[in-house]
Length: 186
Image: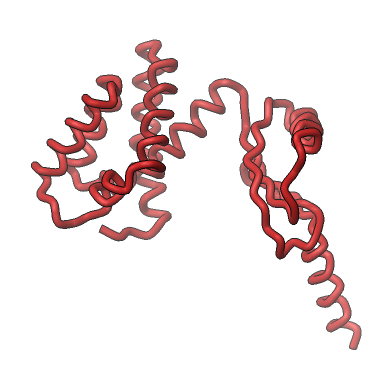
């Protein structure tokens, strides 16, 4: 089933909140961290799993039994295994990638961490990444994990996104601003 991204995120957020609260109440946060890492790896490395969760061809029963078998083989905790089975029964398993992302964010928040999405024109060196992480940590008052990508269209500078905040120091952005200012004058 192809669903709009916002619907998938909304569905995943509700399941993630329930899973996280149950894990927290049961003192199973460490187990949940391992489960999320396992699922994340499985989603990125298994084309078969991706095809399974996005295909409308399987019946609810087939989908549920496949998901339960995968969860058992992966050694996932009961909380997550049962939730994945429920998602399969309700035909909501297509939201699994968003569920993993939501759980990752919640676990990082629990640890006092925040992830910064950083786009740069060239790959950042280890020193630059360390300095940027230190500066962002001081600014936001939390440990910052850098998720760096390269976007040559930026020409130079950085675009940093932390939560809902974005800092754009790219040359491309400055050129666009200059171009808009020139249009207003002439």
